[in-house]
Image (tube, rainbow over all chains, first blue to last red; front, side, top):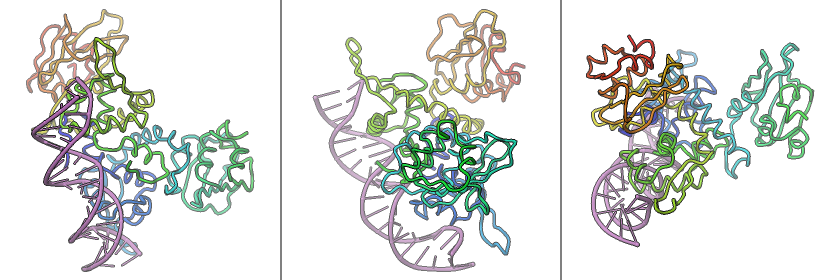
Length: 214
Length: 214
DNA sequence: CCGCATCCGGGGCGATACTG
DNA sequence: CAGTATCGCCCCGGATGCGG
């Protein structure tokens, strides 16, 4: 293992999780929970398959990831985070916070996007203004990737996939949807950049930050 | 610039500060303030000089580091963090927190150590139990590297170098000194592993956590 | 299809030498 | 003091193969 050779906690941490792709693998496992190899590949577009295998081995040896052979009829191997691995969540949240300003200019021409990457920004920015009212569900289709928001105990939770009976539907380019969530643009400006809102518009205004719910 | 090509804030952050040595350069600038090229080299043992020059250029272009030519009689170039760069402090603190457990087993055979690397662990663990008493100063010589602690407004601050009239002096191997600071060993066990304490032992007990001040 | 291993080319990285 | 220049090596990226 390549090491910095410094007796410093930051350097020791980077010795284990500072290699290329490593923290993004942890991101996927935090966002999606236990994953198959193929799920990880799908959530890490651009990674070479041998590199993913290498990193998973290293993370396993470092005590960050554990591998379990699921019994039949699943009959597949599942990769999950150990408790030590889940302790990386605050680190990744700080990295996300620092990186958020870089999202404002929108995706680069050949940037890829996966719906689960919205979860943390959304859950950090959105709140339920009416926690005592019956919960609402909002389907989101950002660049076509399906996910949905659910209100729960005053906060908002993001899940992958399609909700069965959503109260509202939000569809549009990612950077506009994210701009809405973070309050950098309001509903009118979002509509001007291609965001469509169907169903109960009030459900959306209920969870959006003040600056966006205009 | 090598990029992950993912429209995700974490990936965008790592695009800028995920390369090898980059976050350690930021660490040094956060710990020591504006630095000369040579100071950085000294604080980053093991880095290749061309790599340091490359990283500083990239960090400058990314808006994280700024370079200023100090006027005569100093006549040297100083590298400092921009405000955007200082916003990386929480990220590095989380990395440190995650890496702290890796310090318990002590330094590897050829690990290097610099006194400034104690500052964050010390300031996170130590407090002044008698904030109303007159302040105290404690000289620390961990593996020979000089630094000193000062009480101030209930907390403890770490500075590099030698204090002129310290109330106490603590000398010994780094991992034992750090173990003391973080409360993993007490003063007696530290003495058994080679830690010497001269002067006012009470000054030390005043700042150490409960578990260590036995 | 899933979970890799192997092969190979390019470039990031590490060490040393050298310079204005 | 603050870097450039040069040169290997190995990490990384991309493609393909392959056993279960």
